[in-house]
Length: 100
Length: 310
Image (cartoon, rainbow over all chains, first blue to last red):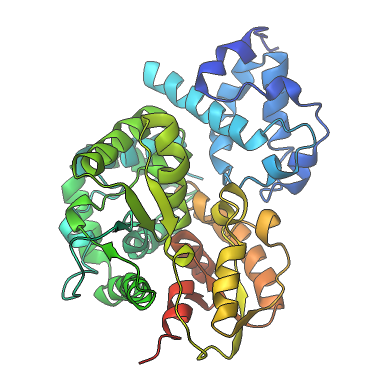
């Protein structure tokens, strides 16, 4: 069971991009990502959209597999900037670690 | 894979204590200029950001990380933060072969030769040449990045520096995009190949040029080195995935997962080798990781400097 946080997209805004809600989950980012890893980064963006904050924190180490190569951002048809969203989540998680 | 939290703590702690991610005292890292006659005054400052100088240390530390990744000892890295930064840095410096350090110093000496041959009015001040902090930014440690970037920018501003000539894509991105955005510091930044202008017909060769992500996509500068090479009589063969759609070398993951880094790097090496000519990189991270992934790679500066008339 997961607890959802409907305002999560708003909560992470201070950490960078506010474009996660523009994503329509087409999967182009996951298809082009050199990691070829479990629907990354689409999965993380979906978690933001549905407010699955705990899932992001549980799977946080996956964020650092991101190479910040920018291919997902280059090819996103919604210009949702997936690469920067992942960086935003890293900042959010680092801030959470520092607080705890 | 190592725990990112442990890696970030070690790197942020080192940057805070020593102003570089490895904890190595600067006088041991930045030695390329020793014995080289470089102007101390001029129009634009050559700013290396110490990235090329770090490569031999990255290679050495990655060798150890590779050995312990996904083993029972991987967790021990969390205790590294308790080792004083200078002590750990000195140890890493002593374990790194002098020949390797010299190899990367030669790259910077070649860049200085290229600027001289191009009659660029440049100067070098090692006291102002610092690490940009870009790895902290990539790792998401925004607070540490901003703190370090402010330190670097303030030093440059206090010295009255307005123009910078950079040598690698990561430092270029930091100074050109991140410094104005996060520390409100605006410098006129150009890469060395953007100011490279000298006549030569010594080229006569073909190469396979690897575009780094930050020149290819983030800064959209890929066409410039190719034009410089063409003007020197060097032809760049078509490489699968280039420019805006260039493939990553895998280097940025090397501190978190050397295995992942090698997997991605090996795929890129296959694409580059398929082009059939000598592989040339223009980023210290790409250079190191493509080599680690099995390629024979030269740096762009080496290819350009070889064209300078003796």
